[in-house]
Image (cartoon, rainbow, N blue to C red):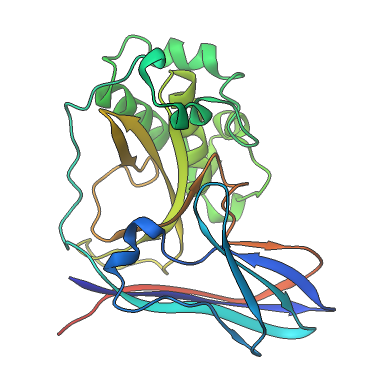
Length: 269
């Protein structure tokens, strides 16, 4: 399957404003792109690209005053099938984990695994380790939080989402990440595209989405506590400890969002 993906964002800036945009497809899917998904801006400005400490591709630029628009547009090849899990993937003992995964056992800005450790073991300590335990976490979070765009808050932490029982996909992901880390399962926060291909209509307006990856059986596996079901066309942009590591845009000054569009559509031959 070929999927047309991309986004466009517009901001109104009162002055020259530095920003970092993290909107390119993750290097693990770069070979599936039919052409590079370069970041394009209007008006055109110099763009400096680099990889952050997690390997994510970032674009650094200086936005001019006034209306500034930027985004990406690409076609990516995808298997076109619903995701298949590995129900027998085992949970590693902490002593056996690769060193590079240990960071994803620790508390972070939005994932207070130390504060919710007792709660995690109370809720999930009786479940079989490995995939069944992670799925139990996803089931709980999926049923515990009510999805509500109108109640979104960029400063909400996992503990607050647990208490308030409301939020958007990042809140679902943060709470599930936090519980898994408290259960000694390395877990990282992910952001990217999730299509509605294969889902019944009507479809909601497209947006970026957050999910998580857990380290089981020697590799990373995607779990999605918000949708809690296999999807077609999940395309990773970036991963890190939580949303603070992988914001779509990081703006160093005042600015007003004036437009936002995301697309992920099957290309019909």
